[in-house]
View 1 (cartoon, rainbow, N blue to C red):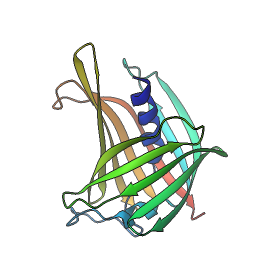
View 2 (cartoon, rainbow, N blue to C red):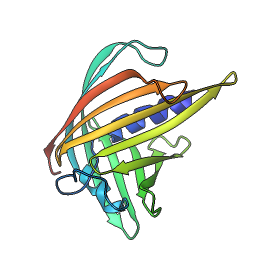
View 3 (tube, rainbow, N blue to C red):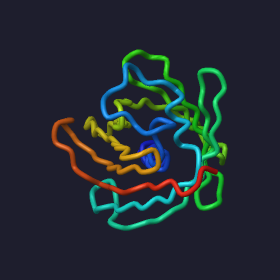
View 4 (cartoon, rainbow, N blue to C red):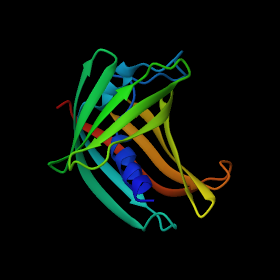
Length: 179
């Protein structure tokens, strides 16, 4: 559960700044490319509203996220600085032809790295994961919808059947600076 919570927070933080370096496409792209993740570059004002669920407490939080991103070959890496503190290095790859990409999260505190996949379809990016405890699987996802190259609406949800989803958090991200 701790890994999934950490992953959730990482993806929420990360999920605040996705899509193409230019204005997002209205329809699905032929296949995702790693260049899309360069859109994270810059400083973002993040507002998060959480609701009380078995996986979240009700609350509201505002943070500032700075993404220092660069590309090398088939990789895009982003060092994330949250409210002035370096938190994580995320490395992205997109070599699959099915719109799925992979991210590798490396915590600044030396904790265990992890990886996850994401589905990139035009201006909607979905980050799924799951946990199994006591024989019961719970599915989670974060859905980011880009309304422009500097504005993202997102939501975090969970489900036990992947058909009926319960909202646990929602918010908005706004790029305030290119650095």
